[in-house]
Length: 207
Length: 218
Image (cartoon, rainbow over all chains, first blue to last red):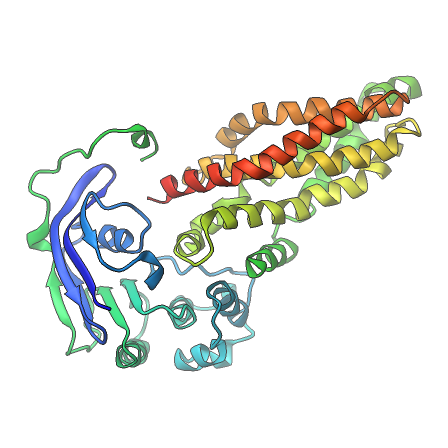
């Protein structure tokens, strides 16, 4: 099943930031999204993940086939590395916690509380969560923040393994992951011409 | 669902999780009120049902903003919203966890605090029954309020203002049950009304709270 995005427009704070975004990703492919700060990369990814409605256009994949990794890792400081992963594995009804820890080089830290991890270790734990969701499409927002070179390479290997297993990956990043086979999409040309306020409705009171 | 309940309970009981905060507040109210109003047994017996219910209600209110705010701040709420569990289920489980951590201990400890307030003998059973029937409504209504204010920094004040009017019917009927029970009068009618409010809140508010969360997560 391909991920086909057709003529998508997304809005942030009631203003359309991107419009006419079209791309498709096949199983085993990665797509890297680039663009200057504020162009709407995160908004686009949140729309794909189903966290906010699209202004226009269509997304072929249901939100249930995607998993989203944001700037915040969703870790609980008082739970250990293993407990954090076990929770997300149980929520998604899949196993593989030990394997996920091994792949992200967290096995030695399994009994340590997330509060006592370094920023890079927290990030590795947040990314290890992707492995216990059992979902085919990974939507990653700046996944390499606070990772060192070795960890970036480690994560690139994990992404490659996921692609090899028929998964799909969308990455918004400024750092080269070394994924030479990945397609690159520059979001600059899709910037909304003149920001127009989207239609009213009572939702406006909450935005 | 079970995993979420277990995680929330685990978080509440570990250091800094907030378990015991409501209970300590309830204890303080029950200890301080006799010191404030004087030791006349007749006066205390008269105000005991109301004070115990107001104390339990305010103790519940203390920890409401934690229901969703912590998960919102660390990004877990986004991830839960995209997880296979429906958001309505997330709200229901989190409200249940809140009740197990605040409402249930308050219900179990209330008889001991009733002694401090010289609650008349027949009232103890009604106190426990009314709190058991009423505090679930406090947690569910609170979860709804917390969902409405989740994105707001220091939304505690707004949350209290939103939730307090919704707590009023529960308070009126809950205190009425204890007041009537303590004097030996017929207390079944207010108890049934109290249980009705709880049943209605438990059935409807998770849907309203999930809708509010979806809007706030955009």
